[in-house]
Image 1 (cartoon, rainbow, N blue to C red):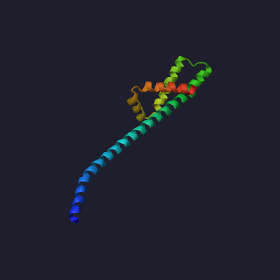
Image 2 (tube, one colour):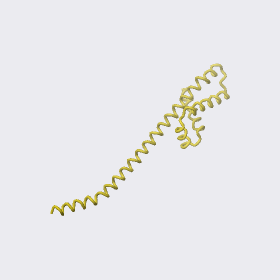
Image 3 (tube, rainbow, N blue to C red):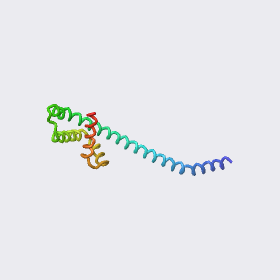
Image 4 (spheres, rainbow, N blue to C red):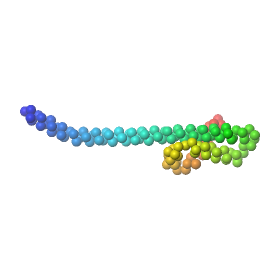
Length: 128
Protein backbone atom coordinates (compact mmCIF):
# COMPACT_ATOMS: atom_id res chain seq x y z
CA UNK A 1 0.00 0.00 0.00
CA UNK A 2 2.82 2.37 0.88
CA UNK A 3 4.49 1.54 -2.41
CA UNK A 4 1.32 2.35 -4.40
CA UNK A 5 0.87 5.59 -2.50
CA UNK A 6 4.51 6.48 -3.11
CA UNK A 7 4.13 5.73 -6.83
CA UNK A 8 1.00 7.93 -7.02
CA UNK A 9 2.78 10.79 -5.24
CA UNK A 10 5.81 10.46 -7.54
CA UNK A 11 3.52 10.41 -10.60
CA UNK A 12 1.74 13.57 -9.40
CA UNK A 13 5.06 15.26 -8.74
CA UNK A 14 6.39 14.20 -12.13
CA UNK A 15 3.30 15.64 -13.81
CA UNK A 16 3.37 18.84 -11.76
CA UNK A 17 7.05 19.70 -12.27
CA UNK A 18 6.76 20.67 -15.98
CA UNK A 19 3.63 22.73 -15.27
CA UNK A 20 5.24 24.47 -12.31
CA UNK A 21 8.42 25.02 -14.30
CA UNK A 22 6.45 26.59 -17.15
CA UNK A 23 4.70 28.92 -14.71
CA UNK A 24 7.98 29.80 -13.02
CA UNK A 25 9.60 30.60 -16.38
CA UNK A 26 6.60 32.72 -17.38
CA UNK A 27 6.76 34.58 -14.06
CA UNK A 28 10.50 35.18 -14.43
CA UNK A 29 10.02 36.53 -17.98
CA UNK A 30 7.28 38.89 -16.79
CA UNK A 31 9.46 40.07 -13.91
CA UNK A 32 12.34 40.65 -16.34
CA UNK A 33 10.11 42.62 -18.74
CA UNK A 34 8.79 44.71 -15.85
CA UNK A 35 12.32 45.39 -14.63
CA UNK A 36 13.40 46.45 -18.12
CA UNK A 37 10.36 48.72 -18.52
CA UNK A 38 10.99 50.24 -15.11
CA UNK A 39 14.65 50.80 -15.92
CA UNK A 40 13.79 52.43 -19.24
CA UNK A 41 11.19 54.61 -17.56
CA UNK A 42 13.68 55.64 -14.90
CA UNK A 43 16.28 56.45 -17.56
CA UNK A 44 13.78 58.53 -19.53
CA UNK A 45 12.84 60.44 -16.38
CA UNK A 46 16.54 61.06 -15.70
CA UNK A 47 17.06 62.32 -19.26
CA UNK A 48 14.05 64.63 -19.05
CA UNK A 49 15.28 66.03 -15.73
CA UNK A 50 18.81 66.45 -17.08
CA UNK A 51 17.58 68.19 -20.22
CA UNK A 52 15.24 70.51 -18.30
CA UNK A 53 17.99 71.51 -15.90
CA UNK A 54 20.45 72.06 -18.76
CA UNK A 55 17.97 74.30 -20.58
CA UNK A 56 17.14 76.30 -17.46
CA UNK A 57 20.81 76.73 -16.56
CA UNK A 58 21.76 77.71 -20.11
CA UNK A 59 19.04 80.35 -20.28
CA UNK A 60 19.90 81.74 -16.85
CA UNK A 61 23.62 81.87 -17.66
CA UNK A 62 23.05 83.51 -21.03
CA UNK A 63 20.77 86.10 -19.47
CA UNK A 64 23.27 86.87 -16.74
CA UNK A 65 26.38 87.01 -18.90
CA UNK A 66 25.00 88.47 -22.13
CA UNK A 67 21.37 89.58 -22.29
CA UNK A 68 21.09 91.63 -19.10
CA UNK A 69 23.97 93.95 -20.02
CA UNK A 70 22.62 94.54 -23.52
CA UNK A 71 19.14 95.25 -22.22
CA UNK A 72 20.53 97.68 -19.66
CA UNK A 73 22.39 99.58 -22.38
CA UNK A 74 19.42 99.46 -24.77
CA UNK A 75 21.35 97.41 -27.34
CA UNK A 76 19.28 94.23 -27.19
CA UNK A 77 17.90 93.98 -30.71
CA UNK A 78 16.85 91.12 -33.04
CA UNK A 79 20.47 90.33 -33.92
CA UNK A 80 21.45 90.20 -30.24
CA UNK A 81 18.41 88.05 -29.52
CA UNK A 82 19.48 85.56 -32.20
CA UNK A 83 23.00 85.52 -30.79
CA UNK A 84 21.63 84.93 -27.28
CA UNK A 85 19.58 81.99 -28.54
CA UNK A 86 22.69 80.48 -30.15
CA UNK A 87 24.70 81.02 -26.96
CA UNK A 88 22.00 79.34 -24.88
CA UNK A 89 21.78 76.43 -27.32
CA UNK A 90 25.55 75.99 -27.27
CA UNK A 91 25.66 76.11 -23.47
CA UNK A 92 22.81 73.65 -23.26
CA UNK A 93 24.45 71.18 -25.67
CA UNK A 94 27.70 71.40 -23.73
CA UNK A 95 26.01 70.33 -20.51
CA UNK A 96 23.84 67.46 -21.75
CA UNK A 97 25.23 63.94 -21.62
CA UNK A 98 25.68 61.95 -24.83
CA UNK A 99 23.03 59.49 -23.62
CA UNK A 100 20.47 62.27 -23.18
CA UNK A 101 21.37 63.66 -26.61
CA UNK A 102 20.83 60.21 -28.11
CA UNK A 103 17.47 60.02 -26.33
CA UNK A 104 16.37 63.36 -27.82
CA UNK A 105 17.52 62.35 -31.30
CA UNK A 106 15.70 59.04 -31.00
CA UNK A 107 12.49 60.55 -29.68
CA UNK A 108 12.35 63.88 -31.53
CA UNK A 109 14.85 63.52 -34.42
CA UNK A 110 15.97 67.19 -34.63
CA UNK A 111 18.09 67.94 -31.57
CA UNK A 112 18.58 71.66 -32.27
CA UNK A 113 14.91 72.31 -33.02
CA UNK A 114 13.83 70.46 -29.88
CA UNK A 115 16.25 72.36 -27.65
CA UNK A 116 15.49 75.71 -29.32
CA UNK A 117 11.81 75.23 -28.49
CA UNK A 118 12.65 74.31 -24.91
CA UNK A 119 14.97 77.31 -24.61
CA UNK A 120 12.30 79.72 -25.87
CA UNK A 121 9.80 78.27 -23.42
CA UNK A 122 12.31 78.62 -20.59
CA UNK A 123 13.07 82.24 -21.53
CA UNK A 124 9.34 82.96 -21.33
CA UNK A 125 9.11 81.14 -18.00
CA UNK A 126 12.07 83.00 -16.51
CA UNK A 127 10.69 86.37 -17.68
CA UNK A 128 7.44 85.74 -15.79
